[in-house]
Image (cartoon, rainbow, N blue to C red; front, side, top):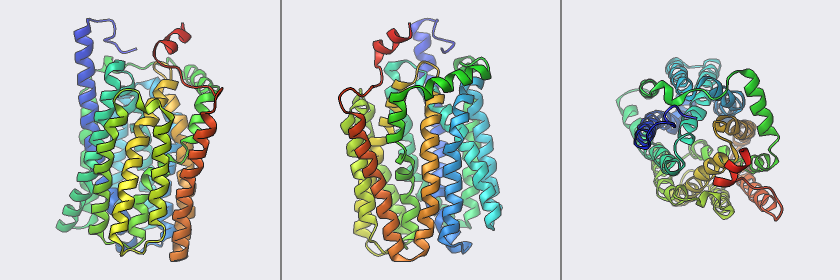
Length: 410
């Protein structure tokens, strides 16, 4: 429970507004830095440093996979030490990883930079989303809508900012600027009143009890299994497009188009309870599958097809992200969002890590391998889509809503 919950309503509302604004501002800063780097990292690794596709897959897969795998313990740790403190630590660690990336010029240092960034990212996500999950339910959906909108705006601006910085110097300028933006986000977390984000768990025994609760929730575990490919589906297009041979300009435009479409679609899901409806996730997974099937046969010259894939992936991201957040918040009890989020994202991260390694090796085999790799990514979305149909059969347990959840906890 937040510290202001027992105060006057207008005080609680003011605290919630301040919390949401601060978290959204931090989200914009970190995403602006992250996407400025992500949009041009593959080209840097491939063209500037001359790495093979398998080595690129190792570096990227290490960061994404480890970041999500760490969410299992880190999500529960957030409940123990408090989201505000976790957010500050996250930003400091991630900024340090980006600082390593500035000087990295060999695979070993690049992997080390990826590991440090993964730790920072793992700490950041449950901290930021736990803060949003803890506000008044009427503001939760709107707050998360603003949170994701900030991400999408940064997804558009980030690659363009990275391109502008590249024109002024080397990739190290892009990574250094991103490190500064993460440091700014850390300051924003420090500005939050400490009492608003007091820890929920009292000790490691509480963490163990929380973990047992999550792992004993069969309905949530079924949902988490369905959501396993979502991290790969959301991130892999930024790896695939440069590896397919598209020029930096075309790749940047496609990433910006993807983000713009996602930003336009996302409010539809974030408002109200649409994210709780099974068809929303199904449509998102269908669009994700279609996006990778469109990408699969491309060779770096068909920009029209690339833009179609970007639109489809944008629709998928706009539908899937808020759906996963809303459903996780429903499954989690008060103050336990970090633990639930950690389990779900850990599974998604392990899947993404393994897939990135396999996809990188397939890309090294040439055009046929690339086609097989991207077709397989699309097939993972179809497999998840089939899983939603099994999970939503009559008699399958569903998350409790509103008063039902409160009554069940009494």
